[in-house]
Length: 252
Image (cartoon, rainbow, N blue to C red; front, side):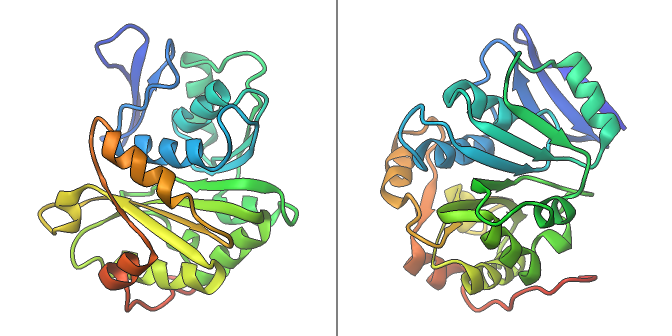
């Protein structure tokens, strides 16, 4: 069931699907990212290019279009493609939470694997994956074959950003890290300290690149954030989330 619920503030809304909050949207201030993990993804988007510079972004998963709105507000004229197969969800979000005029955001009604496969080599500066079905990232979006296809679609030095829900001992995250390291040369992970200590489940934001990930910029953001978080560099990712086996396409 899809619900779009007022969230107390003026023009603030939550998009909820089957009882799970999917997006928070502030129509008056699209730079406000209320969910901590979304703020962390926003920090990566801020760090991949100089302030205000237009970039080309592919978003896998749309819901309330919070991050596309954020990029449109912070990097005007950016070209953005959103891969969201739920056409009814997109239609209702567009009707009740309309996008700004000339936002540069295009929504395609396809799943992430199909949509990425249709893009040309070197199309995107950033690919962001924030897609869930029944509370989990669909398996095929985490398979080594798809991760290699994402690498094909990115420009040299482009970044892949994944929101992954997991908990200690991080079996899923370990396998995804192993798959990413087959395609990308550098990786970092951000998370709440309590999640990394195994005290509660949480959202890991994995960022990978064939060049260098924006590690120093993210460390500065992590220290100054309203909700401070931990950034793991490649050595710490290996120590904390190593030892996995890449996932393969098909049923998990």
